[in-house]
Image (tube, rainbow, N blue to C red; front, side, top):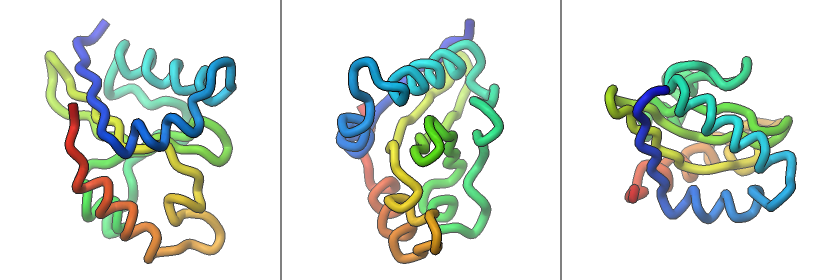
Length: 123
């Protein structure tokens, strides 16, 4: 098992409180995500676990930000850095529309949420 320090910001706590409800499929998926990252921080959590594309507002504002689907419509946004311990920073759990990645894509919304993520303090 890897040595992983998990850090959260206020935005993560705010968004998680809406979706991580006792007994929910989303909570179970989140717990599996954390288990995967604690066991091997660089292992992908499913096929949707990837970096945000270069040049997008999130990748520009928060270098190395990644996202993984917890459900069809909910993604967790995070970064992983360092080794022994690795640091897993949890930024937010958002729907596609909240992230600006829904249909149609909303770059203004992406830029706003990306700036909000970039200005978070982690504990």
